Amino acid sequence: MKKTLLLFAFTMLTTLSSAQYTIWEDDFDDSDASDWTLLDKDGNGSNWIARKNIQFDMNTGAVVDGAIDILGTYNIDLSAGGAPLESFEDNLAISPALDISFYSGKINLILNAQPSIYDSNQNILIYGSTAADPATFTLLHTVTLERLTLDDAEFKNYTVDISQFAGKPEVYIALGTNTSTGFIGYEIDKISITAESLLGTDDNQLKASLCYLKQNPVQDYLELEIAEEYKNEETVLKIYNTSGVLIKESPYKPEGLVVSDLSQGVYFLSVNNNGLSKKIKIIKK
Image 1 (tube, rainbow, N blue to C red):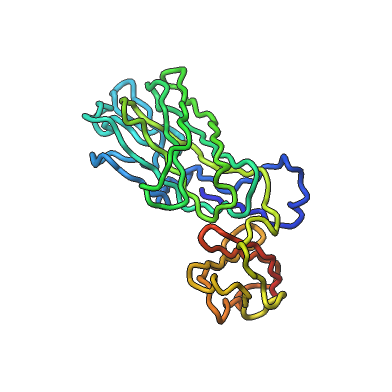
Image 2: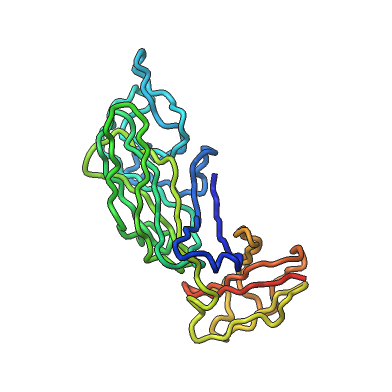
């Protein structure tokens, strides 16, 4: 189950600075990782996959499904009773694009994960980028997933500080395997990103530019007054409702954005151009 919870309500701006906002999470309960990019970099046909955690049938020695929905990758042949693969795995799982443009302060990636049963402690590599191209990713942290028993579920939370991406409109996180040693499996039960605080309405502005609505409240068209250098399709407009759901997305157009199909109420406009952004409250008549 994927969630994007961009909490824009102005009442939230008065909450304590210690509050935590969940920007995004995926618990894989729908057994669906179709919005992830899963790369079998070594080309051996074994890759990250959304499935149940693995168990071994003690009577038959077969690999069977456990009870927990996970994103996993394995260095064993699941169809051959867990026989080791001939080479070490090199697989990369890249998250969908994450919008962190409305958040500031400490940003944490929280990984609820374990080495699979009958494995030992394993290092998982956490990468990050502001582009989807795998060549742009840099290593953020190496997390040691701990295992103390042979066959118990040992999912734990591991936290990585990714505050360098605060205020960025497009962020990608990637999970990589340790390519220098063999392993049985990595299993991710849940991954989430939290923020310490919301950006103020004037933070991370489109620098040295004029950017405001020609009229507010709006009725049929949302018309934006913006500096000349941003009047191009690299400027992207996104409208969210107060629950953080993306309602509309469009490149900038001089004639404005049609909003006649929106219900009356409060919305939030995010104007983004190459990492610069501005947020504007909209009232729809």
